[in-house]
Image (cartoon, rainbow, N blue to C red):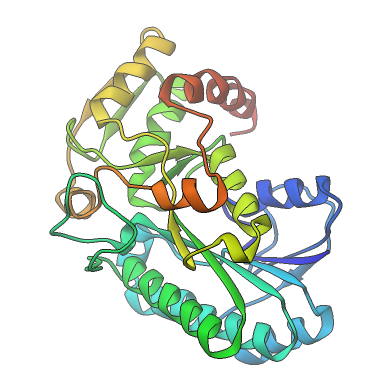
Length: 310
């Protein structure tokens, strides 16, 4: 299958490329900047805010499947809301329209817990009023609705996951959940980290291998089994203090402290504490493999291997 990944240079994209290659797809990567590490797939410079560029690439490649990852994340997005709108909102409609025009069969979209906002119940279901508090969240809600429109209006097979905060063995990319991976990274690098949140801050989190598997499994699910276009996926929801305790247990001598930043803490407070992913479990068999301790055991050796190059 010919697959295009937009935003392939980001936290999710580079790992996704390897998975798609391993299953035998003809994989093409695109981003506005060159990749941050080596790869062996065709790389196309693409500014998703440019409708002519997007249309030309789709016309040339004719991808059957597109993973649309290109986006500016929450914390970075609040520093430049208009750029975030252009990339996240304009980029998504450009990709959907090019997919419609050039015969793409399926588009996978990465949404987020930032799509939600207060008031929220303790366990947040798929269907609830969406009141995002960031431009990132606003554009992701609009992306969900646009994809659902293209599915109903044009028959484009649009599918999306609402990701929790993702942790992986790369430096985080400007999200408000970055306090979690930075605890691990800085504990190994310098032995201490001052988190920008309160100790009781609690949001859904997920280890990157589970996140990648969720994308691929949803893409492979028979359409007739799916009852919706957008699905919550969940793994674990620790407090920031519980993550700190896990890090200091695994990295003896590390010191994790807290100095909440009001702006970023306010964003965290507006997000769910836990997600109900029962529909994903029912419709396409979603199950996470990693909890907090298992993630820690797998993540720390990978981060240690990165330190000499950091």
